[in-house]
Length: 212
View 1 (cartoon, one colour):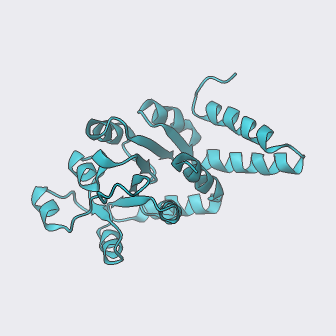
View 2: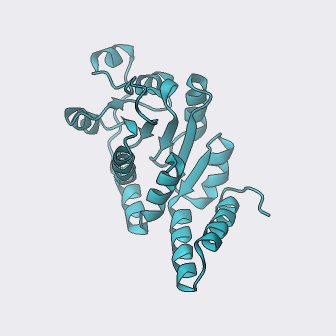
């Protein structure tokens, strides 16, 4: 199963209450001061493993409820994941559990470099309300081929997220609507092929892409 399909399934599975909880937590989360070069040198190494036996390497930005679910599923598929978080306590806790984690502002190239974006296959922006354009530009400067999956708070933000260079974009509003649509179509007797076709059409409309 491709990484994009795994992430799409997990995202669809998240219910509206969880998204509302993520937004509330994000609004209250403390924001630490950015690290300078000396701070980075003092922190334990957080780079992705260099082993060629791993099928995929992912940098996951944000370890809120959405990020935690994504992290668990990706690990279940033996995908190497490094977490980037602005909450220092979260980073310390992850490292204590043996999880590669980097503390810092993801819009700073040195943070992305420390997280191993240059060697990563995918960059998942699971936290809402990020400076997507700056992050994606910095990530692609390190790794032009990295696949970027982004999360927006509202449907209206998806076109801008895609225009910033994301390969795929999701929103709480959009994924809730798609999950409800799929459930309704199954009850009406639609085939999986029909549901997939309708999902593709609606997703294209959400992202502002032309539809057939």
